[in-house]
Length: 335
Image (cartoon, rainbow, N blue to C red; front, side, top):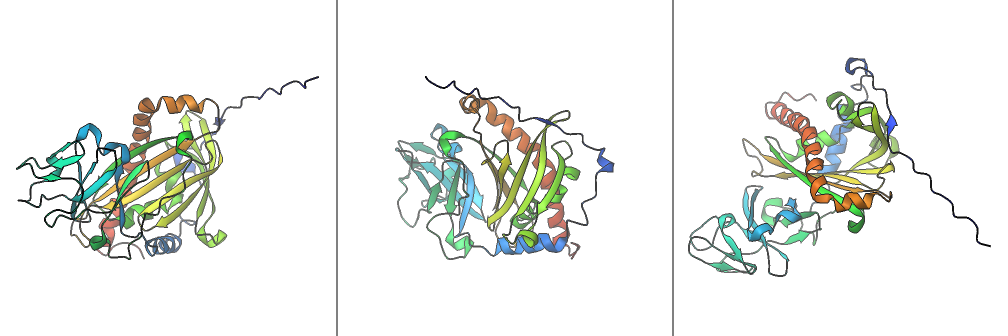
């Protein structure tokens, strides 16, 4: 006789969290010691990048057979896709008379200059040398050895992510007047969450720091607000695998295994008087709930909402990073 099947009980990921009034929160300034943040930042910037820079969302490159142009570390770069979809990149100036190749066209995988029709298939031509590229399925990377000045790596340091077929991803990009280290420092200060983003977080508590755990990570218990007093509690861990990247892994709670990657790509050359940095944030969400398959199917609708959420947070966080750079550049930054 067959035993009866067990019925799985559905549980809601939402919990009721009563947040205190903003001014009645427990201050975090004593815990947010500048030396701890500075130490984590110093260790992050000492790690190798292999001269790899995040360009932007992988799906944006090759859309509508148009090239994708961006200036990275003062270097003008153009990217496009070959006829079989492979990523191509090289200098953004045409080797003939310097036309901006970002304004050209891609025909059957060949980049054709709109000034005189010079065709580039991605290989060397008349002094024009291609740049190494890497497409991780979510983000596109380019390697600029002259700008980076490090020992090159064969591939970038890509964070561990959920299996693509089981995940939903969205990429948000914004630019600000600061340097990459200011963006990284923002992410290595988890204590500002409930104070600076009260509309998004409640009950944030830093459970472990690099000084406590010895694994160079910040562990945070926090609830993400959904509506009213409803929130989703999780434990997240922040790490910096390379100089321009901070990754938040959700290790417990709803969406365990999901990641939020914050990449800081310098747009201006090192030492620029008015530096510009692009923040490229990739959210790769996963869930073992059966209904998550519907969310993946609705990705075109959900991605704009995910980008809007990231944009609201970065409206504040970019102001933080820009303020930090302003103080540093005038010698007024504490410590």
